[in-house]
Length: 247
Image (cartoon, rainbow, N blue to C red; front, side, top):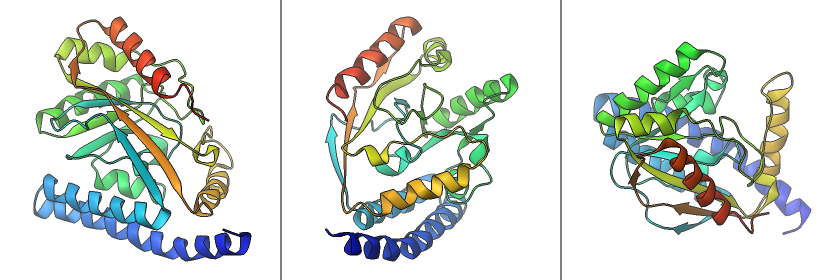
């Protein structure tokens, strides 16, 4: 695809995606409250399918996505990882509180009943763990990125041990998910300080220019962590194996 065609494609995608995500966030929130979390999830999942079609997302799945409520521990190469996954059951996620009042991420996070975390506040982290347990008890899976930030890389950085110990203590069902992108343009990190929105907008524009976005998702089997340190080692091994040939 030549440059003119790519720019035309990006300009067409912008208003379509704005309408789509507005309808997804509002619709998911309303349907969840009026009907049920399961119907809200179906609406959100349908919106993600449309997003994948618009953006030319081509997903290859290795393993079986969990069908029971689990803590899904995932690598975090991009801020947009959640939009490139497919989940078969109602799911929410941990999200940095900085995103709560931002367009798109804030709207969708609210519609998914996200667990907002102030990463500088020990009380917020403690409350988030309690919220996670409540979500699981109500039948909702929870996505957590143990690195605690995006990395703009498929190379795993040091993970935080908190959820591994929580999973061990509470005998939680856990599965690992590894996301791998075929293009470096998807990878992204920003420290959320000055210039974030401008920088993020430039990154979004690069994504809109891509005609196709191949993504590989690898799921582990569901497990129960009986030793937090061994669980962390298993997570490292799982991520490193899946991304051993990544860009």
